[in-house]
Length: 384
Image 1 (cartoon, rainbow, N blue to C red):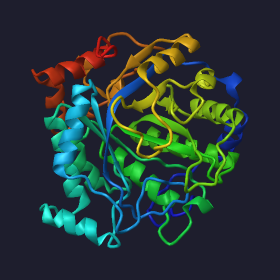
Image 2: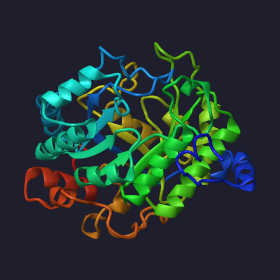
Image 3: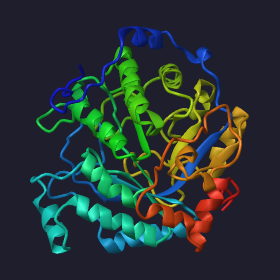
């Protein structure tokens, strides 16, 4: 059982035979994807207050220094993103602030909000008002919180990182694999199209990587909600003394991800952090969210590539590049999906996956809804 799993009632297990089989996989055992996709987004770093103190993370700020965007700042960032042709508002967080962050709580109270979840809901409403579809990475949530926030989010996500107990998560305020797995499970129970992933190079070994991928697969097989899995290398920064994993390591673990996951689950490689051109033959089919207007606030030393650079990566791999919505195509209602199939990868997910205000945002008669539908149809706005 994974660390913390019993505490959170997580019954995810992986078979030793599956682990051994996955450990034998290499780049030559998987096929290259027929296309590359990405989402055009604007980063909205809602708060840098975080209850965790992961040793490799430059995103969180200590009490007294943590920031909290105001409603006016949220609106302005979203307006700029929509004007730039973005479809996604990526809300990034430190995990739920606890009582260490009294200034954050006091500010929320001054604005009339009881918690960061309350304020997060309002921030997503602002994004929708400005013509963007929210995709939120708010850290660990309960099923009830997911059910509340799904009404204003087109998709959501949280990184599993690893099922191993690593020193990188050390300290009294540490995240545990059990808690992360419980969050991924809760998203499935709430029927939220979900993004998760593993972080490579934070002290885990090859068996840990295999077990992490298989744990994600186990939860997806129960709920059908995982739309993509990020295979992300740790990168050097001012807080981290980890060396970036080698290209050979990333090629092997990316191939393992492709082999472990169903064809309908995308394998994402972040183009500002990973050697994507070296990974295309390992099954990568998605580049994640890329912003034309904001930095990667989680990895500020690593600039986003321009659209022309993404095209060059796709051209070098001999595959087309397409823009997508934050909700992957198979989770969209039939009216917004293309006809036909691409080797089974776009097989529609059963049931309804969009909730609350999201269907109306797609079906509207304004310019923003037209932009969303154009991206879903793959006839815009890639060239904007």
